Image (cartoon, rainbow, N blue to C red):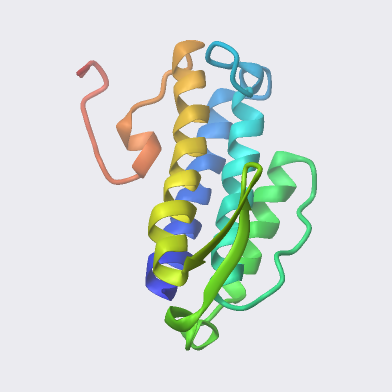
Amino acid sequence: MYQATVPVFRHYLSRISDIVAVAGPDALDAAIADTYPARRQFAIATGFAMRTACSLAGREVPDLPEGLGPRLAVARAVLGSMKPADFEGAEGRVIHHKAGFAEVDQTAEQFLYLFGLPNFFFHMTMGYAALRVAGVPLGKEDFDGIHSYPADFRF
């Protein structure tokens, strides 16, 4: 459970920080249709990272600051303090949580793979897509930090 959460979330929270730096503060108000703006999408993704990792580690989910920069920094620090030993026994946990207005009980694996990770990536992608629609010059390499393309390459 540790490997599927902490390193993944730390990496992609770093990607969000870099995307925010490229976009600049004004672009973070961009939204797609009637969805939340990019700033809030990224804040929600950060909350899902904390909610997922902390629940699986048997920890309380900490309150995060309102500002996106501090929120990302605190979340990355909390994740950085977690160790594989914190997740021992996680597979046997049942996580009781809310999904919107629904009260849900899920095994740790269901919670991670069917709820936590998909919701994290949903909100990260919505923020990224809103910025793209607003004209922020982002590419796949900005999203995952792995790909590399020539500057003039387009899909």
